[in-house]
Image 1 (cartoon, rainbow, N blue to C red):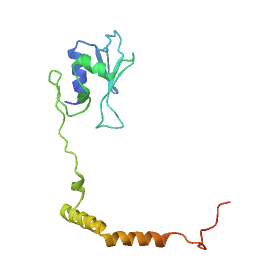
Image 2 (cartoon, rainbow, N blue to C red):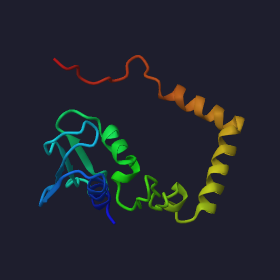
Image 3 (cartoon, rainbow, N blue to C red):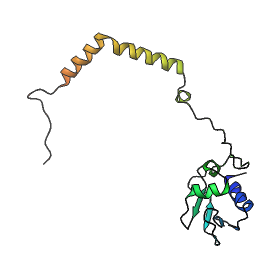
Image 4 (tube, one colour):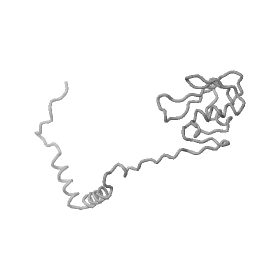
Length: 147
């Protein structure tokens, strides 16, 4: 079941009036007990993997609306299963930065080589000499100023 189906089913289970349309669903708000259809439930067209939009036009916070249904913020995402107010998040493995490196062992050995090189006093002296050489001197051309 999708997050939309879970929330709409929870609204109906709570005994609230629900009407559905192509844009989503309208319902009575469980947070403030409205008589009118002041609650809108709709999918996010710009971000299909994002949370479900739950809006109370009387000003109730989403957290209050969900608490009135026995739901939580996790239930606003697809891939969660509603069981008496509990939800289980969908399993999505986050990629590791090491997954993007074709040969992590080679990369790690190059990092170790670079650290050893930077710790070498001769290398540090070479960097200081290079910085001294790059400093501007009197008589150097500095370019034309902006008028």
